[in-house]
Each structure stands twice: as C-alpha cells, then as structure tokens.
Length: 55
Image (cartoon, rainbow, N blue to C red; front, side, top):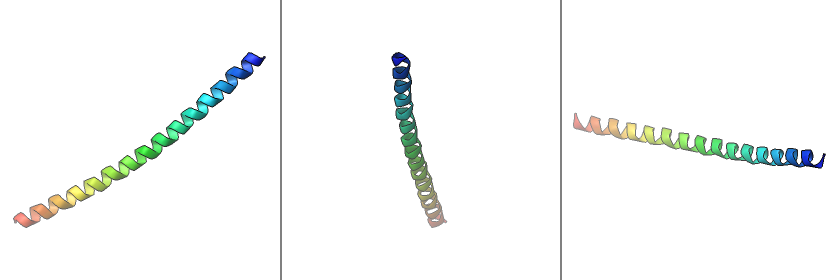
C-alpha cells in the first residue's frame, strides 16, 4: 500500500514539473514568435524604404 502511494506521489510530482516546463516553453515560444514578427516587420519596412529610395 505504501509503495503504491509513493509511486502515485512521484508520478504527481513529475507531472507537476512537466506541466511547469510546458508552461515555460509556451511562454518562451510566444515571446520568440513576437520577436520574429517584429523583426520581419522592421526588415520589411527597411526593404520598402530602401527600394523606394532607389527609384
């Protein structure tokens, strides 16, 4: 009985750590996505501005 409780407790701890890691990965992924979008917009504006100057 005690062994079963220990296994369940260990599984719950691991599940909690995994969910915490997944949450941080989602946050980091969202931040990275925002950075990529901002950089794409900045590069696009620079390219448009640069091509407009050459005409």
